[in-house]
Image: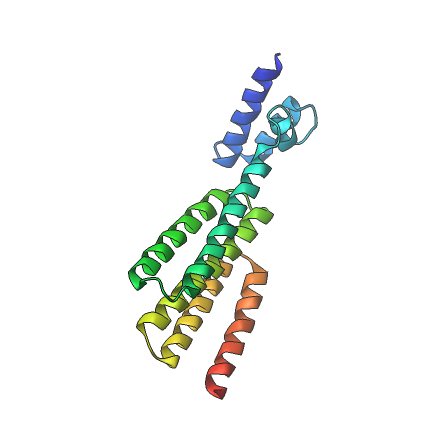
Length: 180
């Protein structure tokens, strides 16, 4: 059988496994059969080249630049508030879109993208809270709300490190609120 046909069959089997059309045991057997004992992911990426890693790195680089531009826009005091609000909203939507692209695989790019998205959301909400709510308690409530969202995201994606960091930050913020 030609190499191209084998690649098509392997892609179909991976699709069946991903969408639960066949049980994993059958898909693993078929993948082992068609890849001659190699893992399915190795054989399916052999002929294509490694562009997915490069694409993920490009997306992360864009996210870092967006995060950097958010920090710059937040610190520019001479810009109009409406421009800052629109820019921050659009940057958050862009970060969310890039996160959705990287969240298909649970690799290091997913974790970095999630971290950048959470930091961006934190910066945007705290900045907007400081602009429109001129209360220290209001800012503290926004910070705590962010950390509670982080905790729920940690539970949703089963990320222990995010849950532990969030609990630590919630305790620290609570102590800071009551001590100041």
